[in-house]
Amino acid sequence: MRNPKSFYLRTYGCQMNELDTEIMAGILKKRGLEQVQEEENADLLIFNTCSIRDLAERKVMGKLGQLGRSKKRAAIIGVTGCMAMAKKESLFKKLPHIDFVLGTNNITDLDLVLDEVLKGETQKIKTDLKFEENLDYLVASRESKTSAHISIIRGCDKFCTYCVVPYTRGREVSRPGADIENEVRKLAGEGYKEITLLGQNVNSFGKDKPESKELFHDLLYRLDKIDGIERIRFLTSHPVDITYELMQAIRDLPSVCEFVHFPIQAGSDRILRKMHRIYTKSQYLEKVALLKETVPGVSLGTDIIVGFPTETEAEFQETYDVFKEIGYSVAFLYTYSPRQGTPAMRWQDDIPEEVKEERHQRLLELFHETSAKEREKLVGETVEVLFEKRNKTNMLKGRTRCWKKVIADGPDSLLGTLQKVKVHSFNHETLLGTVIA
Ligand code: 5AD
Ligand code: SF4
Image (tube, rainbow, N blue to C red; front, side):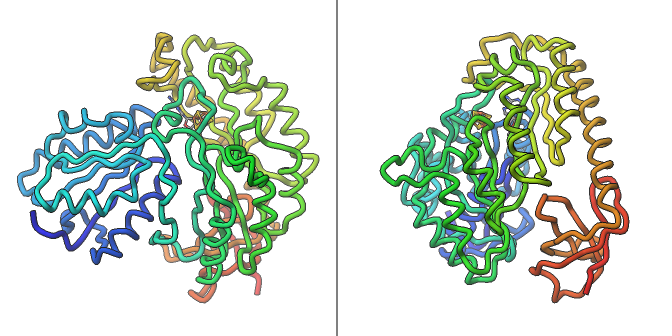
């Protein structure tokens, strides 16, 4: 097989996958390959996949099937990410034209596997369940020069009954705090202004390493001290692990943004129990109340699944009501999708797709209404925006501390800087404003 000179990487799914893609891009660039944006021009194609819902998997399978049918396939093809973990060798049966499969914990093996494929070995696969401690985060080749994703903990020990993540990403393993600090210092030196700390449950950080005595809020205190980093964000939080210490850190640390994404998933206690979310609606609401009291002006984000097995109309209504009561500014709304290997597979997927879709639609409408009202309230206000890039109409584009999208006119010199912007109007998802000199 001929030595590849260029590569094309496509990411599906979550921010952790996006970061893994940036690490793979770094490994390949170090090898001397050039990244291209068009798959037709690449000698190596890698699809970094997602298994969270059936739709995510079908998209990739469709894409890979189509590649196999096209005649001019001289390129090397690799499949990485969660689907690699969920489907393993069976991928080669369905897609005999793919050359290698690398799991979520085998990114460091990319060089090695590529060498083997180039020697003529076929259908190479590595899918370890155990996290690779020696993954070199510093090699990552990031798209943004302003805002960076940083992995702080991988895997998940929560085992919600619907979710494949504990099986595709394994148990929780935290990175040493000092390594994270090193990486953030390096990025600050390169001019990065914002970091987003990533984990399936960032609030578990440090619990798997009791000897280090550093928990998530301690890590925030450590990172807040780094000069140059103006904003620290984090994703995702499991509601039971949100502590008062964390709320105080959000309140007291200047760089930590006043936004918490902590998915409620459902509003009915019976469904929450069946999902194994380990909190009740009222426990969740208590956290919301304490958070709002401790961090005035905090914005909240959530994920919701509608149509979980046996969910009644009245139970969906409880989700709808609690969603309305809390008033989220960010929401990802999903219809339930049964996943192979999860405990929820033992229950019949009994809610018809039309019913799931109709519930999804109702919640979406409510979300659009409440978030439009939220944007309307900001008209006339001044917000702080970190400008990251230009949009299609050549306007500067950025976000507020609370994750609101803002666009404004201005010169290139404002890219990568924090600016005060006076909001004058809004559209369906963006605030429009003027930079205040
Ligand atoms: N079906 C639908 N949504 C799911 N999620 C996770 N697993 C499933 C599933 N089987 C959603 C949850 C989670 C988000 C990342 O994806 O809401 O928080
Ligand atoms: Fe999945 Fe639950 Fe873990 Fe989130 S907390 S990754 S939903 S198992």
